[in-house]
Structure formats: structure tokens, C-alpha cells
Length: 502
Image (cartoon, rainbow, N blue to C red):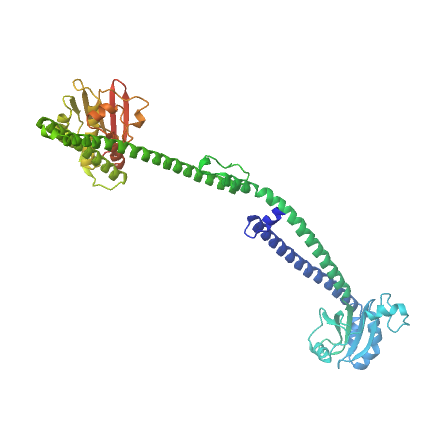
């Protein structure tokens, strides 16, 4: 019962397919039935027409054309009817005024209507009454040129359909009379009605069997679709790795499954990215809060010390104020770095123009030398290399990478190399150091915000783990890429690739 209700839902696919199938099948059966009825009707009536024509062919045409007067028609009327009227037929001779001169009707055993009629023969004769048409119609036939072809259908006095054929007596252009033959159309109608009921019964059976068969076919045809629906309904946020089968035996369903799997993959990827971003955001907020709290706590502590009387001691006052200044500068740098990352995340377009990387590095060299605090900085610059870049942002990249190298190299034996080169369509900027290196488990984390491989060493120089994140964001905005290779105890190489101008 439940399945039947599901089938009868107007908006269900099974109902729509089934109703359209039945509509097409019914229309097809109706068209076939109409064509069959017309064909059979023409065939049966055509057969009766041939029977009537055959009776007219029994007449002697030469003798028939010699009958030129009404008197001759009356004289030959009985012979003419006797030659033409056959069993189950009626005939009449019509004069030029449309009056019946004589008539004859024969039953199934060729008994004439003027035979002695027994009670059992009355019904046979009554089926073939003499058909009297209007005088106007007879007049129209007399005026018609040439022979009278074909047949006509008329109803007799008992409202039964009769097949009527005519033949002119005498000259075709000026006839002296007409021979009229009629035969009942009831046997043909009985056959047509019987055929109609047989065809109707067969059609109903075909519809029932076809409906049952179609339901079974639809059940198995739509099974993959139902399975797909059930699978989709079972998919939740925690089960986005579920996939639909793509070998269902139906091309369209396979394409739909494949498309849905692709959509699921994108949703799963988006969900994972969202989870990752949320996690990174939580981590970022936690790290930022921690990093902001450290200098603020220091400043707060120094202020408390001053309020407790240290301000009266000039030496302690200078020490506290210098410490507050250092912590406020660190705090200011942290806020500026966070603001810079925010702008980079928003991908705000900056002015790009032709820049020579070597010019930028040479311009920065004195500043980098001071920044190195005794470490050796070596430049290995190739010939002039042009790129489309924002000069200030490229300076920020070089500064951050050199600062990172300084933080992780020895103050006395540290060596930092800055080199430029090109390969095919790319400019290559390499910054190499002989510092402590980065372990394999940490190398994929170095571009994460607030990540420091050695927190105490980085914080010592005022670092917060944002420098490399800024570098990565800037290079991404320049549609370049950055690569890292490192070995613990040997050193680290940062390689930057930017598209060069030929």
C-alpha cells in the first residue's frame, strides 16, 4: 500500500514516467485502432461493392442499351431483376420520373419475395426491404453524365443501413430507367462492432500487462537512483568521505554519480579548509594574545615598580623607562606586523613596476651590514635582472629573511650569503646561512604565524614568528614561489622565484 502511494504521488519520477508511458501507449493503441477500423471498413464495404458490380456485369450490355422507352423498361423489368438480384439482395426498376416500376427481394436461399412465404422465411425477407429514395435524388442520378460508379449508404424504413448501387438502362446520356440494387450493411457493422470489442479487450489487457511490466522495469531502472538518494540522505558533515558508486550500468546515472562525487570532494575539501582556517584562527588568536600579553605584562610590571618608589632612584628610573621603551617598541612592531599580514590577506593591489633586484639589494646592503651585528654578509649578484615587483615589499622580504638568518647564526662565525641568478623565465634570489638549521619535522611549519623553531633565540632578538609568514604572503601576491632546504647544524637556504622580464 505504501509503495502504491509512492507511485501515485504526482510529483514522483516513477508516476511521471508511468503516466507518460501510459499516455503514449493509449494514443498509440487509439491510432492503431482507428487505422484498423478504417482499413477493415473500406475492405468490407469494398467487397460488397464488388458483389453488386458483379451482379450488374451479368446483364447483356447490348440488350440493355436497346431499351429506350418506359414501356420497354416495364416489359424487361422482371428479367432484369431476375438476372441481377442475388441472395440477401433487393432490387428495383426505377422509371425516369423516380417511381418504382417493379421490385424484387431474395432471401438467403434465393427465394423471391413473390414466392409462397412461410413463417420461417419472413425474417429473411424483412432484412432486405425494398429501398425507396426521394424523387429528387433519382432525378439527380438521371442527370449525372456517364455510368454510375461506386455505392451509396442509406437507411431503410427500419433504420438499418443499406449499401445501394445503381445502373442506367438504355443510353448513358439519356437513360430510360435505373436498376437499383441494395444489400444490408448489418453483417459488416456486426463484424466491425465485434472487431472493436475484441480490439478494446486486447487493448485493456495490453495496458494492464504493460503497466505491470513497466512498473517492474521502472523499479529496477530507478533502483540506482533510489540507492543514490538513500546514500545522499545518509551523508552528514561527519561522513563527507562517502562516495557514490559510479558503475550503475546506466550512463546518465553514472554521470550524475560522478558529478555528485566531485561536488562532495569539493565540499569535503572546503569543510576541511574551513576547519583548518578555524583552527589556525584559534591558534592565531591564542598566540597573538600571548605575544601581546608578554610586553604588556612587562610594561605593567615596570610601572608598578615605579609607583612603589623606584621613580625616586634615578638609576632605577632610567632602567625602568628604557625597559618600557624597548617593550613598547616590540609591541609596536608586533602590531605593525599583524596589520601588514591583514593587508596581505586581503590581497590589496599594490603598484608593480619594473625593478632590478640587484639594485634593491645593493641599496639595502649598508642597512643589512649594521643589522648583522658582526656576522659576515656576502653578495653574489649576477648581471642586471628585471622583474615586475613592488620595491618596498621586496625590501621587506630581503630584510625578514636576513633577520631570520641573523637570529639563527652564531654572532662570531656566522656567514650569510645573498645571491641572484636566473633560470629560463625566472629570477632566483637565494639567502643562505650557516646557522643551526631546521629539523625535518619543523620545516613545513616555518611559514605558520607565530611559529619559532627556537622560541628563546627568536624572542631574544624581538622576533614573534611572523617574519616568514609575511615573506610567504608577499611572494604569493607577486605570483612567485619560495622554497626551503635545510640541514641541522649546517645551515638553511631560502630560494625565491619571481618571473623575470626578458
